[in-house]
Image (cartoon, rainbow, N blue to C red; front, side, top):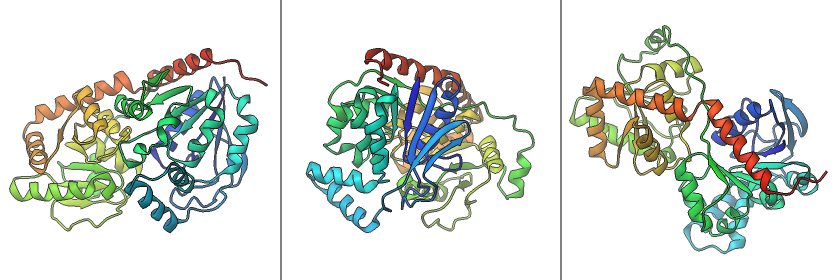
Length: 396
């Protein structure tokens, strides 16, 4: 098939969950499909400033067309508009203005879809919340497949999304919880659809990774938080809960690995490593007693799957339906809703090595069953075939 992938940023060195998801699938499907990625010239998701040249390029065998961003995001205006839209019952035109200001504003990409969209058999859109997908999908709705990467946050509740979510010809969801959320917002069951997650390669043999941790002063037993250290990721509550737990009972050290976007308290059992290399990251995952994921909003937690890929049990925020659901389906961890439950979970895992090992094995078995690349790509291809069979052939 001739496929277009629309995503806000694209590149081998561009971090971001939906961007990485798009790239991984594009590179693997390019072995048997003709794929063109349509994206912006931006690297930074905050400013959307043009940083890459417009035009066509090939990246790891995938054709990429970049379109210039009309202007950077006006941060103050966007913040004010966000307050207006999310603090009250904003009119539809103001909600649409929010999607416009959220950027990246790439009118030439929309023009490409208007003039050339019918030349693609299908057009896949990543992430409903950005300009290219929100305004681009309706232009090719008859051949559009949406990967919404939706979280149960204020943006998904905007009223203009009810009609938007009814338009695509098909859907690819990351988790069953995401599919249920988007279906509720659309006011009906969305079909055809598939839940695909993302693929993982088996983790490499551990080798002598303990030496890497010793060089960083990481203790023999520890709890791990991996990712951006940010209030929006639930880290403030995590650190509060952990300090309460450590003051009341024996506690394993908490190691934080990732860039800090907030103040980290000075505490003898909290160790922040900052941004870590891939080698150190793998060593941490290979040796952690448990991986803690406190985020209240997720569409799919890649870190959770990576932990299970190493046989590490998870401790997750039960208020996040996606995390709660993944842990229950895998029986690969425990969850908490309060400081007391958080402490009880950590104490249980610290004391019961057999339980830790069993939960880690369950998580790994779940990844083997659901998240290896051949399984994921087969689900994607099946959905593509289903949607194509339901629509008229693409015109030249």
